[in-house]
Length: 113
Length: 113
Image 1 (cartoon, rainbow over the protein chains, first blue to last red):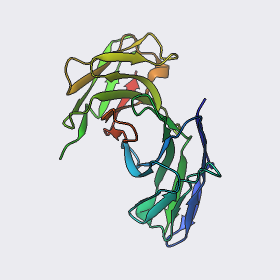
Image 2 (cartoon, rainbow over the protein chains, first blue to last red):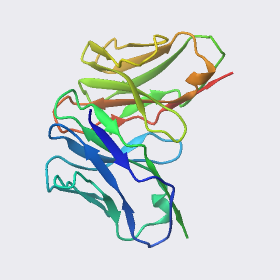
Image 3 (cartoon, rainbow over the protein chains, first blue to last red):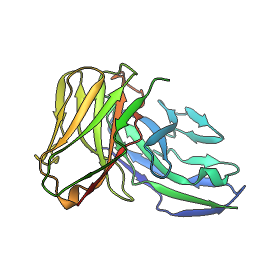
């Protein structure tokens, strides 16, 4: 079945460092891909999405490009802030089936001043 | 702002005592989901409704049930909570249109005494 694999955390960075969180997927169809962020004690917030190959999703300085050839959707940010500390989930939505999501395990990011 | 609202944010119940968690939405979305999220894990889908059609995940325990009396509201009933049911419960909604994201509430954290 479809699956998502994320790099394990925690990822610890200093403020203004460059961030990459790797995400790869396995899917039989043509999924949409998402990054969600979860701050402590809160629900998940949509960070960005891409619906087809070579699409780039971006929001709040974060970017990710849908790479069909490498089945990847890596999250990047050029300069992280302390306020970016959170858990990041990569997810895919199958091409059928009510927007059902398959999540990666999540990657915790800690940014220090 | 249109949103997904979960009440209460924190719920404490006794071992074996039935408990109900609620979710409402102002997005007028067709699909509503319930997830269980344990510490440091990805959300685990319990079930979802497409309008009034109920869809149970194969590994959701019988102890968990759900009701959706109208488009706006959805309830999660735990008939006899065990210690292992202590978790964050997340409600989400989606349009049902392919490639669209899910929108999450802030969750209810359930504790079992």
